Image (cartoon, rainbow, N blue to C red; front, side, top):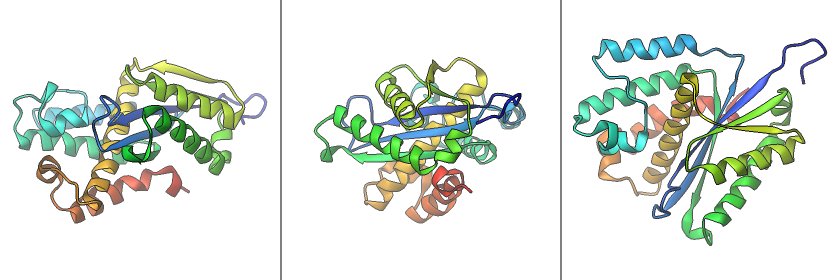
Length: 234
């Protein structure tokens, strides 16, 4: 905790889930991105915009699912252009002052979404206890989430309050830096889930078009991304 007269320190937690809508996917995943709000990312935002400008790309917010499939904002874009967006986002990720964790669950092992959320809350509590010094170093914890993620965000919030015995705050994302960090959570969740699918021999044609071989996914994406993983930090 900050000492007397010291500036208050705030930890942001950005939530992203995969396979949460509809419940038809084989796996359910959640990624939490942790960001010390004293670490300014304005310069990274400028570099992101410049990278898009140099490549002649529109400033489209990253949504990994539609990016891979060519839907929504990416409708009509070639595979080459969509790969360029992925490349820029992955480069951004490597330079952001963040850590993260991802939990992946096989749906068939749970009675339903409520059972998964209960397990997830327990896993987050255990994560906090395992890194208690890190989490206790902040004066407040703020959970940021998207529409449709309320139950997951509440589970994260409840885990924070239980493990740290301090009030957490919840926000829907609104400001530009929030979106960048949320997009990082989206991309990390996608990389972790994609690696698991390759490991289990379940990679789709879309996965293979974007990422190539399992070796490429693990060596050039997962290994690089996991340098940011909370479990492997410090």
